Length: 318
Image (spheres, rainbow, N blue to C red):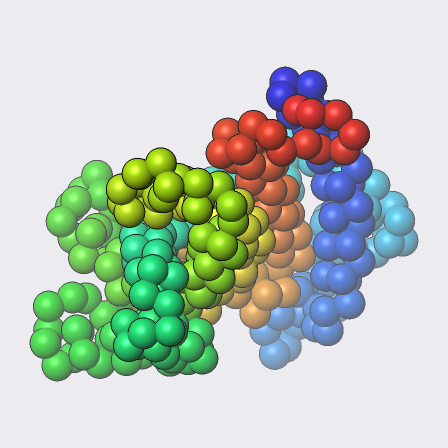
């Protein structure tokens, strides 16, 4: 296992390098001049030229890329064009909030998806199965922002029990922080738990048809042990795969959710940077997202090995 983890960590280097090239080129294709936006409707050409020289925007693209990469390797993610503040400091300030929202959404999804998926498989082709499947299809079909708006209308406007949006630090007011987290977390989990539940249901049905499940019943194992020990563990592999792949969706979906609830995470930071054409901040934020996704994929493979030691990667058993 240790050799495989080292191998994957080494493989992350060329992957991140390719991602930096793509990020740099795509961002340069965004229309609009960040320096012109900075000076408003009546920019001074001399001031624009001076600022462009300061940020190296007049240099050829390949020179701009190598300068950016050289600074990254030294731990310097650059300065934002609009605020003239370190990009890394702004990102690190927002990362804990985004991770907290992502983790809360995943936990809520798992708490709902695992029992409903097992129930749907256990009660296959019954009324309970039809009801669970129908609810899952409903939540998969609705857009995340629409679900968020409905939650705001019900719990913030009509019932007035939760805040419309915003953020409170848990260090200042833990209760207020929990209230601010509920609606965005539930919105994040709304469609995700439904897809996980459907996947777990189909995986459980496949596992329950295997010979070793029949053998477990013959040996006199209880239904609880058959479903929650033998079947569930082997059904989690595709679920974990989907969970790892959905992290990218979660990070992308957080941009919309954070916008709906005015949640000051990395999604809002990225939207602000795009609106202001702040190239260093856009590059840094997207690169940080990419690094998180690469790390999550590594953790997903490690989870495979912990759940099923028989899994092989390549030609050798890990």
